[in-house]
Image 1 (cartoon, chains in turn red, blue):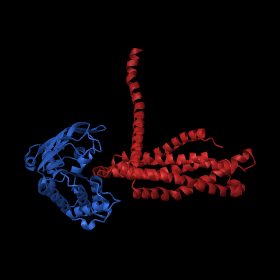
Image 2 (tube, rainbow over the protein chains, first blue to last red; image 1 turned 45 degrees about the horizontal axis):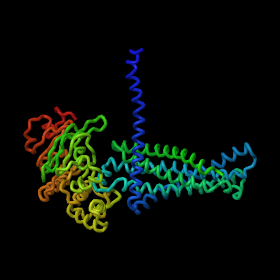
Image 3 (tube, rainbow over the protein chains, first blue to last red; image 1 turned 180 degrees about the vertical axis):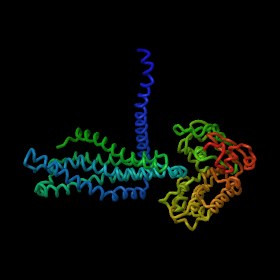
Image 4 (tube, helix red, strand yellow; image 1 turned 90 degrees about the vertical axis):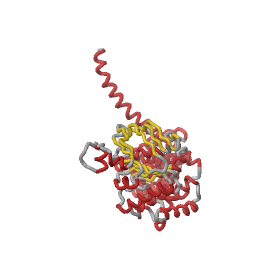
Length: 272
Length: 248
């Protein structure tokens, strides 16, 4: 038995190493994200952000994404109404509270989360690609040589723009999906506007949860994407990987935040 | 000794790039670092201004150990030791004059207007004032390199690091850049460390040369020392022979 263990030990150590390596990588990753978030917040508080850079980024994030988000939320709004209506009719033939329920679910869940996932693909990829390209072409080093802090110069304007515009687009998403849902309800289930647009089940807590999600997702997308960009290495192939990772990891961050914020929201602001 | 790398070691993952490099650079000299691609020449000079941190060893600049300074503490080091990067690294979103004005605003704290006026004067020195309002993508490689040099010189540094300054330039632009580096050293007493493969530059303007090979310094000497050395590896490199003992 002892001899067997002697032989088994290296295998077990190798297996442990295989387990340890991704865990260490995850830990380093999370530490990097936390460090970047802390540094970004410190820069935001330390001095007034560059207004021009903020507005340029806000335009790129917000205006550049309006059409993309609008199309997506129109489809989401219509499909949600159609599916919910069909399923409700299996239990009850009455749809007068369909709108009230859907507005709540749109506000708490679909408007902020789907909108943020769309922004993660468009904005997150852009941030990672732009910063990653600057890293591999030494432009970030040139910034450091000019005494310009890359976090202050590159991350802060994108962070602030994303926080503000993701929250704004979350409200826009709710509006668009509600309009699309109203049209779908009218066409499919013959519900008139007054019956469908019913806020009786929607409370202030729903809007608090929605706003909180918009703010948190808006912070997560640029931090995850910028961190991927700043740690790019290996030329154009590295930029490609950084961009892919930015989209995947920002989306994952949004899903994880959604879980946490939904649970917290359910406890602190229970649905009406 | 104004610049001294002592037993510098740097590893990137499995690759041990610098395995104990010792180099001393004297005041006002034009010092070239040569070696095959990927041998760690750029890595070496990036350590001097804290863009990379060594795994082991020390770096002294004017007697001060700089390799363990914080990012903020490195600002004065970067003010007196400028760097011209291989790809010019101008910011595409800024005009040439704004690129040159950036270090003036950040290091010296000048207002935008004052920085732009001074930046225009710097562009004149490299004969690029007529392109002050142009954006980097509108310029050729040689012009971008000259703007990058203007940006590096804008703070009147005592030391300038050039990372392959003549790469991708036509021969005339390359010689103009060589002339600029030489004048900096001779007229203004600036100490230059130049990373280069350009044999014409090396044997025209270098005061001394260090060759890196397999993570170590193979030889330090004047251009004549290099021409005369019987070392087959150095001879293969400076004569540009494809066949020989050198492992690339």
